Image 1 (tube, rainbow, N blue to C red):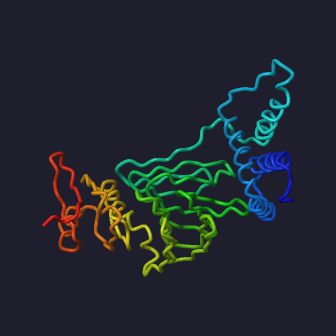
Image 2: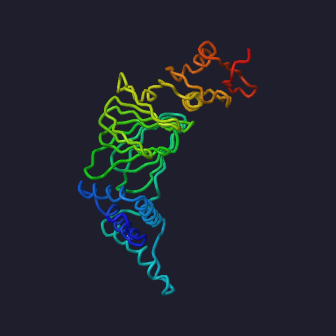
Length: 305
């Protein structure tokens, strides 16, 4: 597509792509063309997002009434066209966007395409757009995805500014309380994008992204990429605030962190049911103290003596 196309033409192209994505399982060549069009101009992604949001909003419209005034006719025709196209191929557009959440326990959920997601405690995963039902926003927490292969149907997970696109099958995504994003691959391959950064991770690869940059490591045991499933919490140079948030999500303890040490990094591994012993050991490892406040919250703070 012409990157210098006027906005009106781009909006038309975006609507055509939205109809195609909602109305068919894109073959590989069409999926590649769609990705090329999105990448060709920043305006393309914005226009497509608007077109997709309009189509998503139609799921909440019980019926389309005949317009009362002629000036509204063109807008009504555009609104009716995608709904009619979806109905014609049997796509249910009345279902609301899926929001998947876990409470105090690990939860396994089935996604609409046959893939599965294992959610750590306190995780929130939202369906971000239909795109053949394979795009999600990880709003908080951590999830292990086991993705069904579907030719020409990309599976994407967004966490903050990072976008993870499946090139394989099983991977872990974490969005920490600090804003740090972690991705680890247990099986297959994934592509990770953020702004000008892009990398392909294979089995055993892991990386973290935060405001300071990107750190990439190799896992000694790829099968341990999501050991939190079994109650094991492991960290490599993780911010203290993220460790504390995990303790809050995985155990019955309530932990707070003094802002002065919230970004202090540590490397550690412990079982969630041994979080109290971990807290007790912190003063021997770092210049910290852990005080129990009147409300029972354990406060991690700088050492005062």
